[in-house]
Image (tube, rainbow, N blue to C red):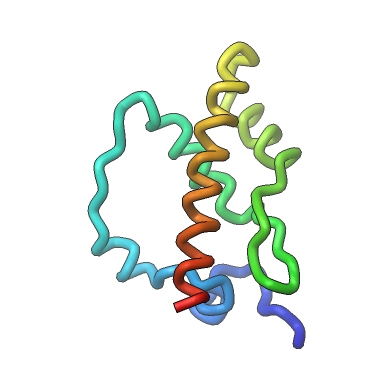
Length: 102
């Protein structure tokens, strides 16, 4: 089976077990101010997931580094932001796994 394209269609969201745009908008959450930049970068990397036969496996870290450069993140902040992005990544992977496994 050929995976769907990466054009953000509803079919792609279903294949990756992502919520629809309306579902995502309905879920409120609190973001600590110190995590705002990591969240902004994580969202900017939303099309940079590595996907295997079982679904998403993690972010493409060279792409994450590239996004940090495009957002003019100073090198001294990159390690901390990567650590925060990795926590978001693990949370997303866990949520997808929970949703896929019932």
